[in-house]
Amino acid sequence: MTIYQDVLGEDFKKLHPKLQERYRIPIGKPFKGIGTMKKIERGSFWLTPFLKLAVRWRFLFPESGENIPFKISNTSRTLPAGETEIYWERSFHFDKVTRHFNAFMTIDPKRDVVRDFLGEPRLFYSDLILEVTPEGRMRIKSGSQRIIVGKLELPLPPRLRGVVTVEEGYDDARGTYTIRVDIRNELIGRVMTYEGEFKEQST
Image (cartoon, rainbow, N blue to C red; front, top):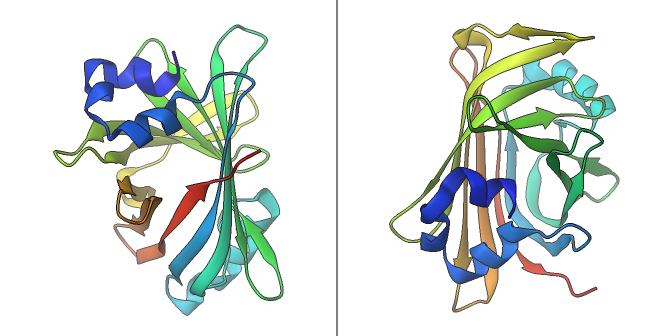
């Protein structure tokens, strides 16, 4: 049973069957997908220095565009302490450069929430709230966030948090997974949004 099944419980069965397949992610059997981001938009131009810096940690990036080739890989693995971790690798292939947006997800057993560690090495983490829409889509929203400084975890004030909304579905007619990600901040507005589709890549 994966972390997503643990957190959603019986609601996991309400997901579209293809999303249930996708989010099981057995250990040793990664999910790999390939597709196209129809649109990638970044925030205001003055965010450019921050977005360029984030590239070093395989986090955010300054590029935007349309019809950008995309790859995704989700790998489930067991950590030394025995907990399960899902490693997310997302690659966006622009004309002259490939950018990455990677993360590591685990469960906080004390609070029964998913923790989303962003960047490599890990910069900070966000609590994630998972829910299933009436249409059987997976909807993920961010909650409280903490910066990682050595062994310390410092909570981010609400106004400095990135407000993230992710919705993933499945288009039966096209046989593709659909994805939309929106990252905003209360003070500066949009940081990045992207939306597109992908198919499972046979290994």
